[in-house]
Length: 393
Length: 146
Image 1: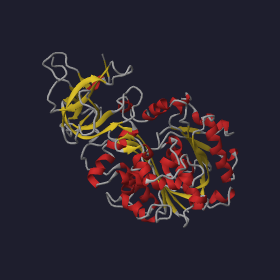
Image 2: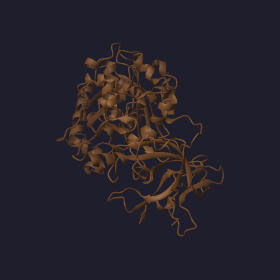
Image 3: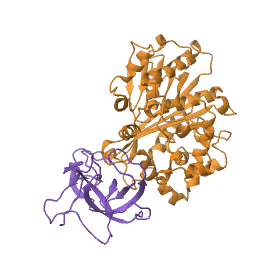
Image 4: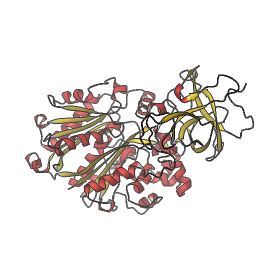
């Protein structure tokens, strides 16, 4: 396999963009990425386009990738449409990486785009529920519920097991809202206090409104090529993909003794990259509900079970800490346009690694970083998709 | 009334029967799953799964009150996971006889299955599904026992 570098990233801001269609959001991300990489549409050999809800929400059920790429002037190449719930963009990146690593293509484009504001939030919520196995969504299962009580994470149960409080749950939201307040691309730019998060209205007990990622429009993209080809396009620091792991969820039985899938996928990414959690300098992770960040700390190997809140209390994962987590603001502040999120994470990490992150720049430029993206729910008591990418300069 | 997921529910046809779920048990490794699957998820044997009646009772694993409802449901409503004595841990809703209030349900409590409409909404009031209620409630009403 060839070593692959990210030579360009770009994004459309996240938030509500009523007047913009899927292809308009993607256009901004794609051309910001082409310009960032110093590449032309004719340089792109192959493209993977991630999107999750466009079929249900925009009516464009098929060929969404070809539609958005044509709008951006990219035609006549292999285009692969990727639907993998909230991990669609991580999956698109893996496709692009594999094309270049395998030698099948030299320059590959990965796009993630989502249009969630369609004038009817009930329809958007229903579409979001439909990215889980339909047997569950038909019975009223929602993502908020799943984070609260689903056996794979069971945040409500963790309050009893670990003694975590509502204030502990608020800590990641507060930390990330500060980071997001510094990010001009972020959807929610108001720094929040513990009290504001705890006292916002309850969505699903024990999760409050400000602990939950909201509906969002957005897009992001990345261009990859072999490391040695990078200088042909750009003088910017090439960011290497050290591992790019994708796993489907497992069928879980109560007390089956299996390691949970977030841990398994992270361990696979560490192994493939030849590093461990202590080597990471920054992480973007999937905090669709803020307290999930506390669980992911332990599942990514950053701390022992139950110790998540301590990492924030001691400032370890804050922007000025040893391993800043979600410097972009994460899913709750930066925003979670579901099919774009994985590449928004990658764009943030590349900017941080190059020292281009502006007011939220991590002081000591990170050299080794991780993006962790997941999505969907299966009847087998697990998420459907886990994507973990490790980047190195 | 139509049935949501009819292959997953046994609906009584006479007063001697009680409703239950229809799961599958693996002949090779005895793993029980719900809903039914053709391949055992534990030992990956194909063709070893036999239909079994399960879930007349269970123990509450976790529960929450959803304050916002997706289309076709009415908030607030309970959403729960129930551990069935046969093995599976399943997602379920809670029967209408159980008031939607904090403190009514407690993890670990004994539950029993009832059949009733999915939700009291135009979309779902004509769709029969399984739900659970606390087993110890004094009325001890069981659907199908007139």
